[in-house]
Length: 83
Image (cartoon, rainbow, N blue to C red; front, side):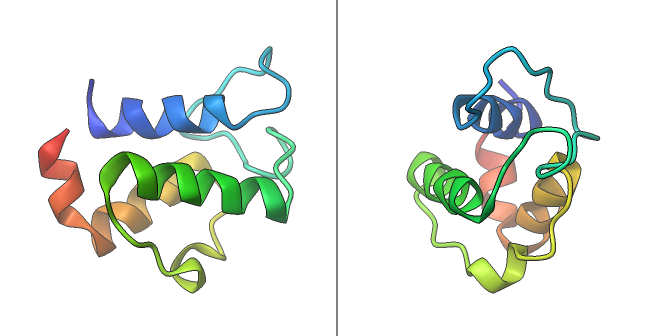
């Protein structure tokens, strides 16, 4: 499973509505219904999965799944190489 696929899987696992389709272009709030609590839970899931600490401020402006992938790739390139 690629890094991108794993992030999308983690997003799906944190959805309330499991029927929603998730793509890189999916907007966390508008398309997927994430509120601030759900976003924190997603960040916790990513931290647990990859064994990293994520500065919440570094991802607070993320709007889409692709934004999360981009920020993580920039700030934690080592996890991209692992998966």
